[in-house]
Amino acid sequence: MEKLDLSKLKMASSSIGERIKTSGAQVGRTISSKMKEILAAPTPESKIVDEATAETLAEPNWGLNLRICAMISRGEYDGAEIVRAIRRKLAPGGRNPATQGLSLDLLEACTSNCEKVFSEVASEKVLDDMVKLIEDSRTDHGNRVRAMQLIRSWGESTDLQYLPVFHQTYMHLSTKEIPRAEQEENYPDVHYNLESYLGQQQLISPPDRYPVPDTSTTTAQNQEGNASTFVRYGFNSIEEKTEHLAVARNSLDILTSILNSDIEPKPLKDDLTIGILAKCKRSLPIVQRIVETTSDDEVMLFDALNLHDELQLVISRYAELAAASESKNHNAGGEEVYDDSNIANEATLPLQSRNYT
Image (tube, rainbow, N blue to C red; front, side, top):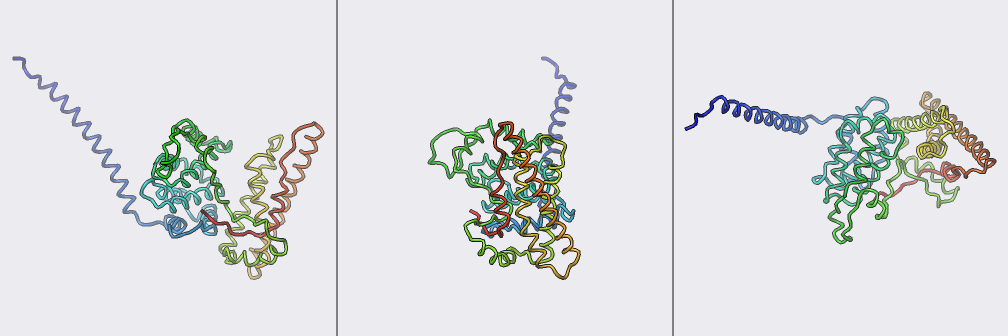
C-alpha cells in the first residue's frame, strides 16, 4: 500500500486555504464598501441630487440643475460626490424610471457646464452603470435611448480624446448586441447595436440644458412676457442670479478660447462651437434681465453689465469670422458655411417652458 505523502497533502491544503482566505477577503471588502455606502451620513451633494432627481418631479428643475453646476464650478460642491450620487440613482432595475431619467438630465447638465466633471464620470465608472442600464431589459425605453445618445455624443467628441474610456465605451456598444427592452416585446425579432437601435427609433431629443425660446409668439408678446418668464424660473433671487451669471461667464470663456485658439481654420462649424455660441446668445436676455432687476447690489450689477458687453463682443467677433470665412470660401468656390441666423433670432426672445416627457 502506497504511503500517504503528508507533505503534498499539507501543501494542497495550504493552497486551498490561501484561496479561501483571498476570496473571503475580497468578499469582505465588497461587503464593507457596500455597508459604508449604506451607513454613510448624507452629504450636501447627495441631498441636492436627491432633490433634483425626486420621482415626484414631473419635469427637470432647471433652476436647481444650474445651481448645482454653478456650485461645482465655484468649488462649493465636490464634483466627485455629485457624480457619485448620480451614479447611485442610475442603478438598473430597482430605481424609479422618473428618477433615472432626471439623473441622466442632471448628468448631462453637469458635464455640459462643468468640464472637469468628465474626469469624475470617467473615474467613478459611471459609464459602466450606463451600459448596464442600457443592457437591462427592465430599463424604461426613453431612458435607454437617452443613455445611448449621451454615450454616442461623448464617444464622438474630439474634445474628450484625452479620456479614452468615452470612445471605448461608445465603440463597445456600437459592436455589441443590445437586448430588447420589456416594452419592446412586440417589436420584430431583430438584433441591434447602438447605432442601428438609435436609427430605428423615433429619436427622443434630449431636453435642452435651458428652456428654449418659443418662436411661435410675436415680438410684442415676448417683450410683454419677459418679466413674468424671468420670475417663473426663479431668477429673481440673488443666489440664482449669481448662478446664471456663472453659467453665462463659463459659456463666454469657452467661446472666447475657441476663437482665440491658434487652430486654422477656426472650428466655426464644429458642433461644440455652434452649441456654445447658442448658449452665449441665449444668455444675453437673461443677463439683460438681471441688469434690469438689480438695484441694491452694485457688484452684481457691474458684473452683469460687463458680462453683457463681453457676450455681445464675442458674438460679434464670431459673426465677423464667419463672414470672412464665407467670403473666402465663396471666392474659392467652397461650400457654404454654417448659417447661425436662427440662433441670432432666438437670442432676442425670452425663454419659455418646455414640457419634459
